[in-house]
Image (cartoon, rainbow, N blue to C red):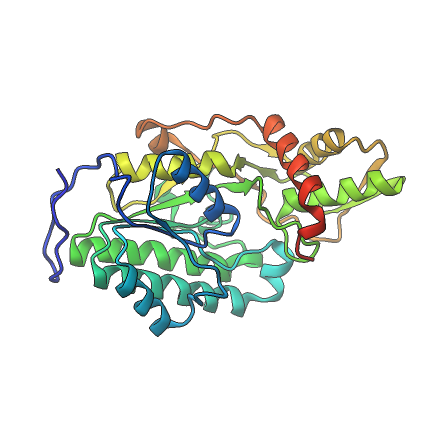
Length: 332
């Protein structure tokens, strides 16, 4: 049985993960984004009846007083913190101040307000970019803070590391059984396909789809194509988050991934095949590759009883279908 969380500093609470109450108020921060919308779908599918979400137009999570007012009025029992300013290499490298400042504001405001109203269970979602650029592969959770970060997205990574630290601090000082989950590269319905702000996989999908339609004889991608990346379908990520909230309680962040990776060149070839592009692929080696490899060790996740279910090929096909169906409504 879960005990009421402590509110005084240095109190401790005995807690054993258990099934979440499907009728309790559950706030998904960032419920319209790639990750948040998948979490919302997962929770709806699992029978949660009191889901709460606010768009950025309805609630600016950078506005501290507005966030506190929202938490006081809704008093959620559970929270998934999926809201974040995100982007690919170009966006992170061009706007580091934005990625650092806005993510810190969002995280601190949401977690401080959640603590004030005694949110029982909170899952903070980060990114595999928190780990050192040259961390031993596959990356274990204890690699955190053992080396230099990838410079093209270090500002975003620092913000997410701060979020992990805040979760750990809340556990230590207030006894609340909050957790952190660090997913690998995510993709799927609701992704950002903007040429300027997208991550590598949706950027490649759009590039090859447009090349196939226009009859272009070649497509040019950044870098050498040699870096290796692990990709997880966002619906698998959402299932993992709920599983962890019900089965894991610990201060250390949990890696969420598939445990397998492919080269950027291989993923580009697969996407070209899925969209039906038959031209050539060229590589602009004057552009940065980013981290050579980012493969997560998912032993802790497997020990908690969860493994990914959606294959990369199947996930890519459904993502391409979603892109085609929603292209006219996507942001530029």
